[in-house]
Amino acid sequence: MISKKSCHFCANNAPAPDYKDVNLLKQFVSAGMKIMPRRRSGLCATHQRKTARAIKQSRTMALMPYMPE
Image (cartoon, rainbow, N blue to C red; front, side, top):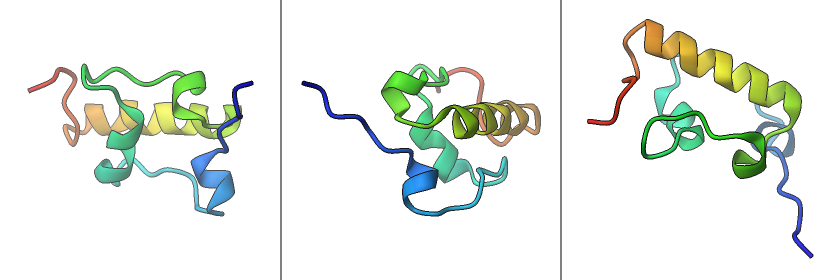
């Protein structure tokens, strides 16, 4: 039986992800710079949406790359 991952933000009582915190957002992006799905990242639905939005905003502001280097 597969144990369920707990949401990083819910478990640590952390605030919602911010687009300026690139080091945190890199944890939820694969090596190919794709946003990880919920089943892989272990986030709850609310925080997955907020994280994806923060990653996209960070890419728009040129803080994170779209493609791997």
